Length: 608
Image 1 (cartoon, rainbow, N blue to C red):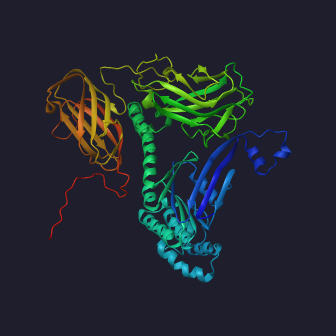
Image 2 (cartoon, rainbow, N blue to C red):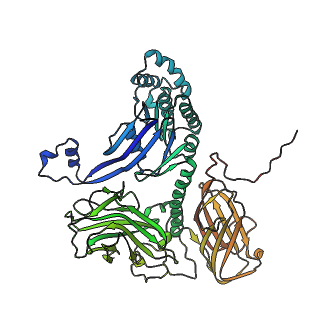
Image 3 (spheres, rainbow, N blue to C red):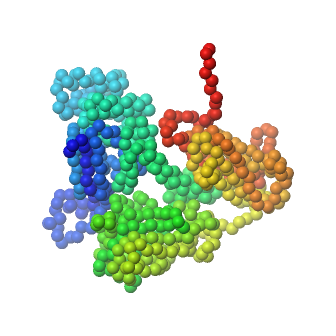
């Protein structure tokens, strides 16, 4: 294998998801040939597919990705705990794997007894075990507990013992899967230094999975991003972290904007549900005559665009393309749908729409669209793009509007890429196409603008004026809810005054997660050169250098009639209480904690 420690070729792992528990037992014991009269129906779930990877000896490779991306499955295959469904795995070297807490040690044994058992299983003699014992206890710093039963240890103490024991053996390949997350920051730092020393002194290869991007960046010289069972990016740690965090920020941005849309209708604790963040649209392929085709029609990719921006995508046939845990997925329930199992050709992975005697004769799929698109008055047109290979022209594309399917058009066999316009009325039945969308509860009529302010959860006031929108911009002029420490930002409060307001006061107040006020900006209209305010307008707060530290924040915005000297809240025209969510992040290269306030400071060095 030359200098390769790990080499994976076209690796894939598939799990069978049976509809009936009895079928799972029959398959596990290989009894299918004895129950030939019974058809076992199952879905194929690919956790990994078409994965190629090489790790050289002595490399420290970090693996990152969201929960459910396939990271742990990959490490279990490399360590030999599970076998792949397809592809090859070549590993050169002795492996030590810390995959999860609770494995390898016996809870009734003491820490010392577990160390002896573990080292003995790794081929060490009694003399060698005695020599290593004190080194392990000293590194783990568990002198007061080493002779106590393991079941009395906390998760952090267990992590110390497990890591110290695994690394004292000087493995050729060390695999760590998030175990160190149970330990404290001090011990995690010691672990990073030991793993660095292992690679320098013994040439050990390290595969390190963690959600702590700071630790990954400090330890690893190469980073791999796994997304939905495939390698999304492989390269320098800082470059990969930038791309990964950009994706996470986009998702967090959609969540924060959706919170703000819903905050006047529900308590904040309910705002993290998916239905509050996304609108869902179901589409399907179906024969124009309602019958599924006898010849397979290949589909490689399904994409949803709002104008020129891609807002949702399904790489058909890729790992997890049928997982309802993801926002966008195909529905392939055997006996009901007519999607084939995942296949591959020179063009890539795909599935076929073919007559499998499904009850509904169709091949459905679902997209989730952030409500920042669906409820935006200036929303761009919605479009479905299909990459496929169709051999017949009677395959229709239809969208569900809540009552039935609406036909969008027929697939053209002469084209590999084709598009279908989706009217917004699919998501908002009864709404005229091109009309401004109003945020509303499911099944209720659109909210009509009112002159008086209705008292709701998170919103109150005496009327006379209303805050109609709150927009936040970074120094590049981009509207966003994610900022870097030190950014220049603008916060724009758009309002409508239904009467003449005498010197109203505009306020923006940001709170920490524990409810404490982090900063408050106050501006009276008279200070801005206007003693009276009426009609529609906007107040802009300018911040040249943001001093807020890394955290998630929630802000209140308000128009008050005046300010009180005693600090009590004065009469208000309109208040949106804790309705605006945003976050402040540190630069990726800064791994230490800068605090909640990044105070500009000047230092001076003298001769004493």
